[in-house]
Length: 229
Ligand code: APR
Image 1 (cartoon, protein in one colour):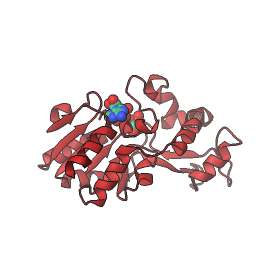
Image 2 (tube, rainbow, N blue to C red):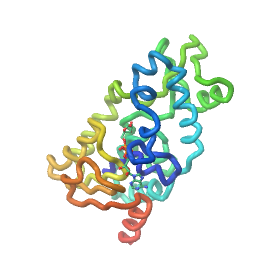
Image 3 (cartoon, rainbow, N blue to C red):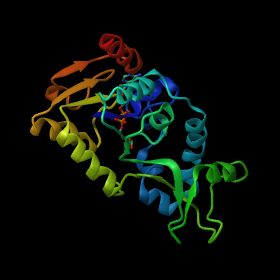
């Protein structure tokens, strides 16, 4: 089972969050990515998300995403649990993808519950700063997990089950700073599995890993595929 974070998408041109050039070095997550911020000023939250939606929809999967899809095809990867909202694993061909922090696939109206696909939101953003619900004119919320919001129950339950069953949990491109997802490698170890981490720089669980490779996700995963022959 593979657990990915923003570090698997930086080679697609999408900045991560906590490296020195990361997004949280420029934006305060509580001001732009918390449920409270959205409720008090949805237009301000969309001033952060609108350019992000454009960047994510224009990005292409990179070698890391492609290798993980190939490893799934070879029956070596059972699923990818991702913290990313960019849909790049699916676009690279991975079938079993568990999105524990939601995704840009849809946005919802908190007033009437209606859910709208990405293309509807992107179309509206061409002519307005924030997408609104065609039915009740409330500002739509991206279906991504904001700080202060519960994770999608089915996704997180599945992630825990996969981690508990995994012979190896391979972490790629995550600082493992955000809970409960950061607990998944410990779930695997407690169940007798092994943990390997591929990450540029340290992570919060380096001490718990059986193997740590400090390097680029794309390059390292391509070497893994080459080594498997
Ligand atoms: N190859 C390998 N590692 C990389 C690469 C790369 N090309 N680029 C960046 N990294 C590393 C960074 O050094 C960093 O340690 O990936 C890690 C990314 O960590 P974060 O930026 O914290 O991203 P992530 O772990 O996904 O954050 C978890 O926090 O803000 C929330 O919801 C958001 O899902 C996100 C969650």
